[in-house]
Image (cartoon, rainbow, N blue to C red; front, side):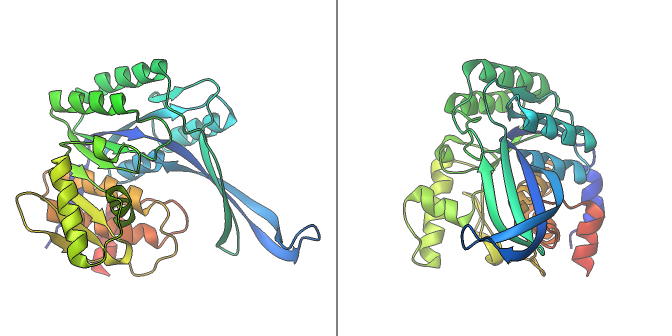
Length: 323
C-alpha cells in the first residue's frame, strides 16, 4: 500500500519548472432576483469578487502545495491583469521573475459569473497569437538558467501562443542535455510535437480529436492510445477519462487502468492541473508509474470536492485516502 506521508517526504524540496500558458481566473458571485427587461436573461447582483491563479499558474500552485520548489515560466501582457497575476504569485510564494511581459498582448483571464455556487456564464479574454521572437529568446534564457538545477519540467500547453514549435523542440533538447524529467499536458495544436517525453497526459476527448476519430469501443480506444504512444515514443501515455479514471500505456508493459476515486464532485475545473502536478512530482521523486498515478488520482479526488480551481496538500491527500 502507498505510504503517502513517505512519498510527501520524497517530493519535498524537488525543484520543478512549469512552462506554460499562465492565466488569471476571476470569479464574480451574486444573487439572481429578477429577469432583465432588456432581454430574457437573469440580472445578477454581484456581492463577491475573487481572483485565483489559473492554467499553468495553477499547476505551479499545486506543486508548491505538495512541497516542491517551483519556478514558473510563461507569457503575460503589460496591462492591469498582468499586475493582478504577479500580485497573486507573490501572495502564494511564487517568483514572478519567469513571467515575460509582451507589449500589446492580453493576459489570459477567464471570468466565471455565478449565483448560489452555480456558474451561469464564463467570459474569456485572451490573445492566442504566437509569441514574438524576442519573447521566445527571453523564455529560453530563463530555461537555460533554471534547468541546470531542476528535477522536473512540466509543460502546460493551452494553445494560447506561448508554445511555438521551435520553443518546444529547443526546450526538450535542453531537458535532455540536463537530464531533466518532462511531463506534458497537451492540447490540440502541438499534440504531436512532444516526442520522447517521460509522461504525456491528454484526456480522452483530446486523444480522439488528435486522432481525428471517435472511439467506437474500448478496444478502439486502446488501439488508438497505443498508436499515439508509439508515434510520440513517450515513456508513458496517461489518458484521463473523467469518472472512468486513468489509463496508462507504455511500450514495455501492459495497459494499466486506475478507476477514479472522486467521491463528491463539486467542480472539475483545475483537476487536470492537479493531476499533472502530482503525477509529475511523484514520478520525479522515484515512485513507479502506478504509485505516481494512484497518488495523482487521490489528489484529483480532493480538488474535485472544492469549488473553483484548487490545490491539494499531502495531509489532505492522506486523509482522503484513509476516509
